[in-house]
Image 1 (cartoon, rainbow, N blue to C red):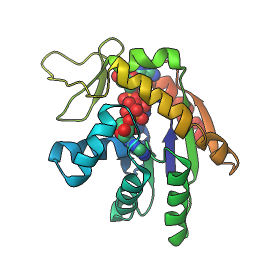
Image 2 (image 1 turned 90 degrees about the horizontal axis):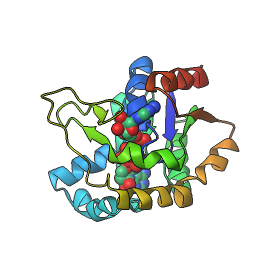
Image 3 (image 1 turned 180 degrees about the vertical axis):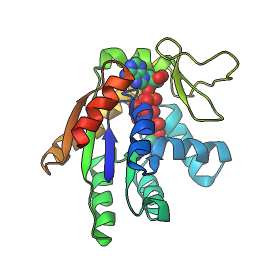
Length: 206
Ligand code: AP5
């Protein structure tokens, strides 16, 4: 199964990916996680991406496309994968299609997680992560247990999220008609309890 998750920042892509990859036994490929690991490791890629990420802008297509091509060529991704946060622009989607064509495969489903902008700022500014396990929490909706030392992402500020939402509407939303035209887009309501959203995704993939 080759799946893509699309949705605004804070729609719940990372939260839902954890449940879905377990169900299908496929790797979770998050370009945001890969970029944050590169920033932390201080690689050339990380140094290039850091400023764009902190300010809520997209990292240039050329950088991202090469990174994803390498990742999906790895052995664990040959039988399928869940892409979270990629593609984010039409050129990224076209590059992905071309890369998969070489192997004679294609994307099976694109899940669009729909959450109104009015809920996004609350979700993003309340998010906390466990740096050890990668588990995502929310101070109000899913508080971390006592004793877990959580962190807040550098781009989870009101200022950066406003720019990220703007980038989503300008650069990523055109992927909706792009994939709808190919007949593989599935719209999923991302509002409600996380377990309810997981059920809707499973139904959309059935
Ligand atoms: P990335 O890491 O991909 O960030 P994003 O798309 O903005 O998505 P988020 O990770 O913020 O949100 P999410 O949808 O995963 O929500 P989550 O499950 O955590 O990208 C970061 C940056 O990297 C970009 O801005 C860009 O600079 C760069 N980048 C990455 N990929 C790129 C690409 N392809 N091209 C160019 N640049 C790229 O949930 C959020 C919060 O809500 C959590 O606290 C969670 O507990 C809570 N929550 C989740 N579900 C629910 C629910 N149902 N009800 C209530 N609360 C919920």
